Image (cartoon, rainbow, N blue to C red; front, top):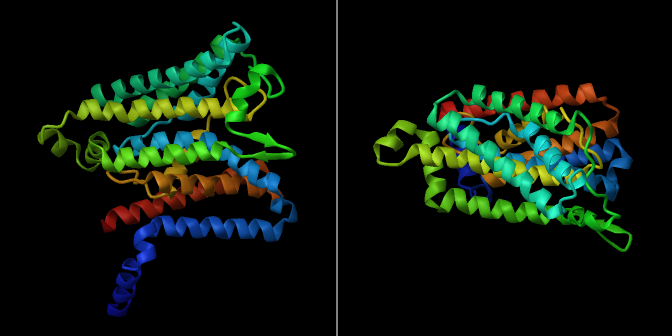
Length: 333
């Protein structure tokens, strides 16, 4: 037992492990292992187009995951982000394609709607003290109904890349010669960098972490916990709006009533990356790595012949494993 402790301490004190973090290092190894496995099992997986597919899926999930990481750190959650993302993309597309608004205005509407839903979630959770699960489940149903109501149950198509108004799609993918470049990955990295600084180096970020660690102690220390608790949900809503833009840029048509279940991919990505479901700790960089695990599974499983139902089962098992690891980690802490 003493030898095991020495080995554990030696591993924890390793400069590489300390720099990257034990949890993130494990996730990186999982990503490499999954990529190698799919490459071995399917030669078609090795194509450049597959990497683009992985990144296309990761953009909107990454934005949602960054936002929900803050909600999770407070000890809460946000189940409205999946259907909310689709709802905001539908509403923005409705203003662009049906009312003739400029694409930039439609994109702004998408983000504003996300912020408004974030305010609503913040009021329900931080001010009215509703359980986050119930509060965000309610707003999830509101978002789903609102998108269908406004569009009359019809799909919405944003301008195509070949048209003059299709420039917004180039924000995430540009074509140079015959090669498509994943420009969206650069935006994801920039936002990861900004939010990492926000969470770890700014007063609001530290207060958000403190609320998740011990809300009552944070309140007694003189911190306005309602204000900063609401901020976490507002930021989550804004990032869901950004995810809506990425979603609209990725798909040719957006159908009402969809998006349910995508929030689980984002939440799973955050938990796999080291964010605790009980609050008080989390990593934005870890969240991105967790999202890539989910993206690798979603993209790679069809290449080895697994149908959509099996993909959902495996995704559920991964989420169970991530939560179980989080429970063990919380007990040790």
